[in-house]
Length: 460
Image 1 (cartoon, one colour):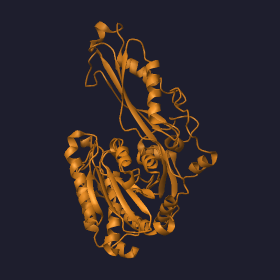
Image 2 (spheres, helix red, strand yellow):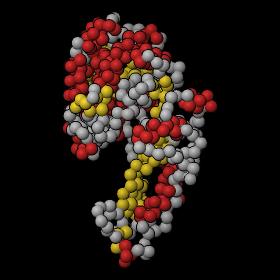
Image 3 (cartoon, one colour):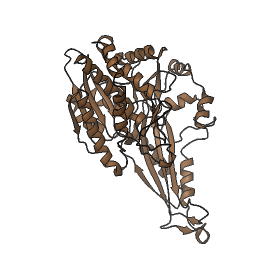
Image 4 (cartoon, one colour):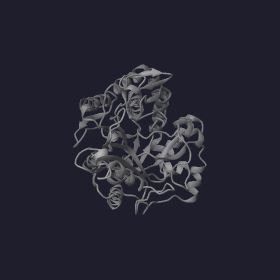
């Protein structure tokens, strides 16, 4: 099988490949907002058609309790490894729409970048994988490995229905390991492969005072103010040194060895430049840990939103009836998301100021931390392919964000996940003006073609 032939096939069809991606991102497949349900259905159908067009078999849109999963396969390589290729077709909401330079669901090319919601996370990287598979099938009539495809529609809302689907179809999804099109590289100037990601859990806490908003002059001092009570509660969740004050929060946390911490310290990283790039300032975070360690290997508890009272122009002197905060945690190996939620709930109840009550809502779709051994043959091959492609050693890095699939596939199927994505962390996914570098589209296709051609030899 000729890698050169597959690459030549792609080069001759660049316009068509790019058009597939442009058509894909035009579909508003926002998973978290029911108003986009039509877009979800359309994206799933588009993807099933694209997989069939690429030469894969048995492409189907499979129902779940939430948004559907799209599957396909090609299983005609006897004796060769079987890879489960993962991606997701759902995207984040485009809000705030006014912050976009061009419409979020109209792909626009500027400065060799393709701008659109979902183009980096994860439609661009997913089309990279599909295009590589298509090129190999088109030029050789077969693949060097067996392929199973699983693309979900709920990654951006916690993959709540992925685990039940995987567990129910475990036999059909069996593979040697997962090769994920999702899971961005850390930096555009440094080839990296993610070897660990943090877990996540989230909750809302609503503080309730009086039965209705009250005049702050007539009633001030007579009843508790929910905003003040909420502020006290939120302040109680951290110590002055930045550590999380919830009793038992750090129990079971697996801290890295000194040698592993030294590996992180050796990664080229300019903290000042990073902070400048996001408009941040030094001096925050948990004491005793570097910025990368706080972002990669330490758990966090963050406040994602707060609401209560009047926030419009001018003034409205009220004591609000309620105040609400959204809280999320990023978790590391040794922490169970559901146990952490219980600890936080107990902390909030114990520290509840007098005169108010609490309503606590746990968000569905917790994610568990995941990690892959750095000597995994699929991971080693990914790093080798990247090193050859970019002319410098690839680095194993950890991810501060959460990708539920690593732990789900490990627990349900007993296999590891190799992240092989060609988006990068600076491409503003989850924010306005998300983009995907066009160079990464073609580099990614080349890398996937090379990877699939070497799996049998290099990972045996």
